Image (cartoon, rainbow, N blue to C red; front, side, top):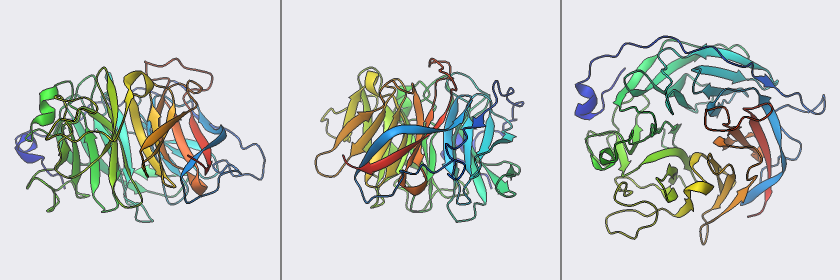
Length: 379
């Protein structure tokens, strides 16, 4: 059932859904495996390691022709689902290497950085619901849809809205959603262009939210009756948990520093008073920071003791190591253009979405793509 967000959402009227998104401007297709006996989603060099790890060799291209892809989630059945921001399409990539349209999400209103953004599936072995964060003509919201059918023929049931009233804008919409090891759904919400929202605990914007799968407030959230888990964020777009269950997030800075933060319940991460490492009492400093020209961080993944951060403006993949003295190493700088999402792939590999067709990149042949990167010990 739909649950309100504090008094902000409680007072809002039900919003009418907008019309369907535009048609796909290109036809996505899977790239055949180099060998007829090789799985199209498992490069032969991909082997799990205890970590830390680093990329090895040139990535394998799994899919070409995607339109502004934003999020990819892998299912226990072997399929994966991909969101396209501007079209509102959800695509299925099967274990056999086929790509098909599952649905066009009703109500998506693309504009600027808004549209169909993050996807999440509660990992129960047999997914019951697909969750989506998207922009409407009036707000950003989170919905869930029953995941029906079988691999290769998935379909989605009617939307169930669980959170509404997240302010939308042409930028800073946040949009990443993910289930944590505690079974709760986490969501990154940007300040929607108004920095003061980030310090306002009555606003859901500029926050990381934590909720039960039905959108209700967990009893152990840091602020009673509130979905707010942490605040003082500008535009966080990456969420990942390490092997100990600790949450980490990536965040866009303004003009100087992008951030990699260790997220703790109830803590204030400083925006708009502080950007990057400020050493200011009362605010939590990032563990690592990068110049905005080197990052503009989006999706974040954790594989074998190593975080991997997809960078847009920086056009590189950051490997991040938190054991000992935290440090990071850049990979593939400029080779594939803008990178939007990173998720653990099969057999200890990494999957990465490029994002050159979003209006800010320079599309290359075959863009946009889903890449698979083999990982080996190192770092």
